[in-house]
Length: 137
Length: 93
Image: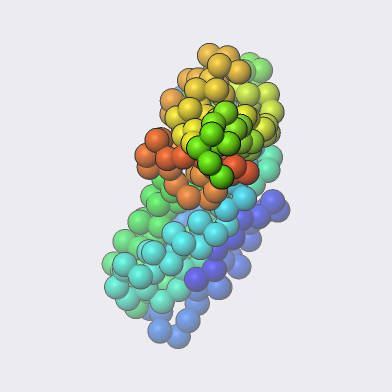
């Protein structure tokens, strides 16, 4: 398990290499990017902030998924912090497993848990000058 | 310490605001006086009266950590020198 938060751009290929083991017959990765539009409004910038415990929480989430899944070999997870432009990678995960079904299922579970449990917040600034704390309005 | 000594004692509790709560409060953290035996609910009442409606709205949607432990019961006592973290809804990914 390798889980982190980082203020610099995410190397998604490097993440996949981290979970590459001889036991793994399948690797599934997910990349979440900053979308140009949100609810019909143009996004010009997006800023992620994180709680000081966020990296420890990312590690906990990854370990929980590893423990509750069958056949998973390795998990790598990283989330960006700071200011991101449209198209930049906000979150990336890679899961390797013995077989593809196990890798797909664990990857999906991991991404959903990150969305719900990782103490990270998103502040969106729109082209019309308005802004929004996602989920807090 | 006798009951008489303790009566009226004020504790200082640190409140840390994150994300939308930080924006609504206009600060990252503050010290709040809380009577000895005061609960997280009491602390939030004080915070609401200090700040405006905007922070109250965020608090209604937030979860809380008291000294790094999730607050499940707002009637838990916030002791001296404790820290309450105000966590608005997470929005990762």
